[in-house]
Image 1 (tube, one colour):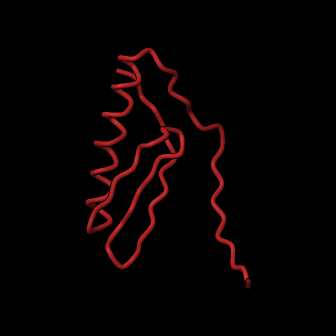
Image 2 (cartoon, helix red, strand yellow):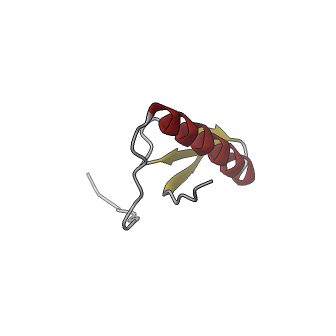
Image 3 (cartoon, helix red, strand yellow):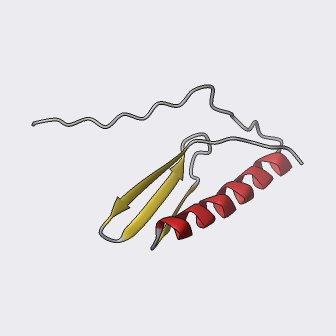
Length: 74
């Protein structure tokens, strides 16, 4: 069993929480609570990685992660 580290972005809106993993294109989920979206994301990542391993695809690992909030007046 290998250990992996992925960056996960979690956003909150009026409908709950949405999470996505940048290194695994198409890997995203949602939940009504923060705790639920975290558990759902763990499941989504595990399934995504298992599928990539079975397909012989590369599993990218982030070197660095930076998150910035930007306020813009348009």
